[in-house]
Each structure stands twice: as structure tokens, then as C-alpha cells.
Length: 305
Image 1 (cartoon, helix red, strand yellow):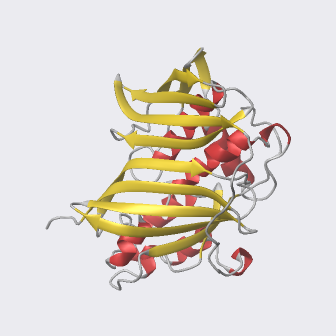
Image 2 (image 1 turned 180 degrees about the vertical axis):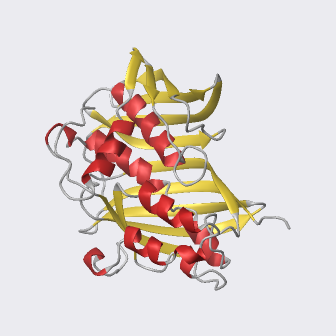
């Protein structure tokens, strides 16, 4: 994955290139890859990074004419941001229409994550979808990178707001409704809608459907459990009134999309219990096509004391 192409100008250029470099895995052997890792806001590797890198590894062993149509993954251990991650790919099946790959991510000799992905050749079939929600235009909304510093005083550590803004710099996120840290103490409908796109243009060698899928996997883990917090009026892990971590993650890719165009991430939580919460998301293109469905369960606990 060559990141030398143009990714746009302005302040977002460097952060997007950093993210693209993060996804540019080193090929150690035919089916073994090595990726760098780094922390996001908490002192562990961001789950979306591991999912995206694992999908990169799987995609590099799949036929070029087949795109991922689904992935299913488990987060097994926290990742160490100070150490590289080794991804080993198992070529489970190559059929006439479908290809299956299994990826294990390893640090310090132990698996921290595993993913199964299925790829398919493009074909025609029956077509229907749910309608896209009616939401404001993204250009009328405030970018999260501007919103976070304004409300740093709400965080358990004011520096967290700056670190969160920096971690999200490659992506322009715009909340349709207030994020959890602005509504702490006021339970509301467990639903969050966010417009997003990467901060730059993917063209030339970078304009490949596989890269768009891997970047979508990266973004998909940023906010999917937030509806759980909204249902209980919790501000979140950054505010300090809950602790949480992703347990598993699944994505289904339905229709073509571009992550450098606006996408709507419509998220909700149907249930939470037993220290776990479930998030369900639908990602729509700006013209209303349902592009991706996402599901995730995570640990969501109230701190003791």
C-alpha cells in the first residue's frame, strides 16, 4: 500500500498520511505481516487500528477481483502501543465466488486479536435496503476536533480532550446529536448519528476499494458503544463514569462507498446487561445507499467506589 499519493491539502494532510502509513504493513513472509502500533487516548492500542490492519493483511492474500463482504473479530487482550504487531494469515478457502481468510494478531508471543473475513466476486442479485435517516447536512455541523477543546473541563483529565482530538485528526467527525460527554446525567434515547469522512482525498494509487474498506473498519470502532452511555446518562470512559473495552466486532459490506466522501454512521444500542453493552450501526452514503452494517459488544462497567 503506497502512501505517496496525494491525500489532500490543509491541516489534515499529515494526520491522514500517518494513518495510511499505519495501515501499510510490512510483508515478512508470504502470509505474515508486521504493523506498527501506537496508543490512542488510553495506554493501549486502539481496537479500530488492529481491525483495520488485520483486514489489510487478509486483503493482501485474497484475489484482487474480490472485496471483503464481511468480517467477524474478537479482541482477546489489550495491545501494547510500544511493540509491533505480527499478523499471520490462514488461507482457509478459495472457492469459485468466495474466499475466506483467518488472521491472528500476536504481540509478545500471545494472540491479542483474531479476525475471519470473507471476500466475494462482484455479482448481481436481489436489491432492497432500509431508508437513510433524515439528518442535517454535515456542513452545518461542528467538527468534533473543534468541539472537544471547548469542553475539556468536562473530562476527568483535561488533557484527554486534546489527546482525543489528536487521535481523531485523520477523520472529520460531526455529531448530529450531542456526544455523551455533553449530556452526562441526562439519559436519552440510545441512538447516536455521526457524519464522517477522512481528512483528505484518496486518489491515484490510494483510490482502491480495499483501502476504503480498511479505513471504514478503523473508524467503525470509534463510537459504536456510545449509545449504551446515552441510555444511562453516562459521559463515558474519557469522563470517568464508566470503564469499557471492545469485545467483538462484525461488519458487513453491502454497497460501494468512499471514505473521503461524507458517510452517515447511524448507531443504536438495543440492550446492555451483565457489564456488557451491544452497539448496532448502519453506515450510509450521502445519497442514501446503505453501505455497511456494523455490530459490536463491549465491556461497559461502572467503576466501584
